[in-house]
Image (cartoon, rainbow, N blue to C red; front, side, top):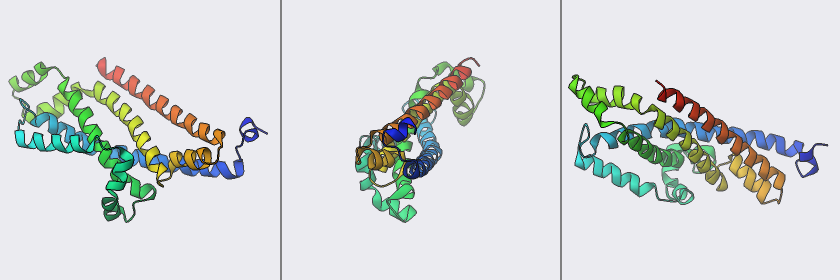
Length: 226
């Protein structure tokens, strides 16, 4: 008998539930990062480009997007899920399970990503923009072909941090019926006073974050040396 079994882990019950929960969490996190990360990238580029003194400075567009992001970001996610359940139903046909969790997770992820992208680009050397424009590069070329590559290191670290945030979102979604490791830890661990189940889920979260952060650090270091 293993240490886990001796302390409350039943392979016949928990192995299958753990596998399903891990698959659900992976699905939620990857889909959210893919869709929300992409939408957030576009939103962040737009925020940077339309701000005062930007390549496409536009006070009205910047103010509208800035208000949108600042309105959604402070809302606690567990409340936000319930607030947009109508949208989730309209898009996926349900507001529970993995499908129902994706729309609110994507929205929250895109808002967070937009700030990460905007702040990474703001930190870039203004001389890069001036040099690009002086050489005759178009504004879109400067934005996409000069500024983004110059900011790859902070962007990579930002997206690594974003992974941790999305993992947190999946846990909160799991707390209200979306499934995943968060639901597994709460229902089969905390609610049933099974600390082994709870700590197995915690160990998986820690391992996932460590791996993603390590890869992010390595990639960022590589881009900085270019």
